[in-house]
Image (tube, rainbow, N blue to C red; front, side, top):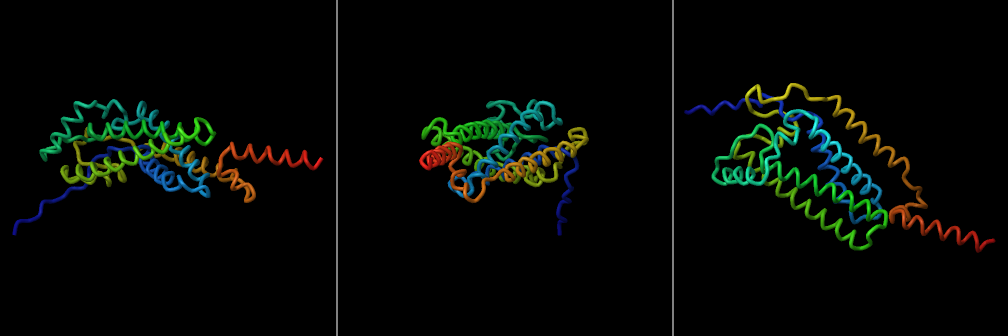
Length: 242
């Protein structure tokens, strides 16, 4: 009987902890915002997750400039030609090996970040009653487009994991992949990840401490415009009483 090949554990650290935390918090924020999008009862949660997504994107842009080796945009953003070459190898069953993000994955990341930024901006405008129905429709269309890109990204990760014989989802949890020792990073930057987590939890706490009381819940669900209308009605009632 031929012995099964020995599967070695991933041996180098590729993804620092801030990158991994960003990835999963972004997925959580988008999924939560999508689920609560049509609920007036959970409007505050929807808005909170939307702002969280915006803050995470701002951090990722900064970390993409000053972060660790494989977190930097200069390490993985290669353009459409490199992405097509990689996809061609993928279709032939001989994908090019990449320690960090592959060129096709890089395009997906850039697209997701751009869409995320537009979603946050349009959501903020919509929440503040700017742009009318057109802004609301744009916000929904951008969210649907991002969901499609996320689906394609997840499918591509599954295919790449199989063809590369490596668990790419697991790598985004542990940070480790197979590779030469010189291709890895030396520090996980747990301190930066801890600050990220404190900032996110602190923001969530601040948002919920300022949540409306039960008698104002319906008005808050409609955003500042509804609150202003209610405020005006209350003053009108006071004037009538006088």
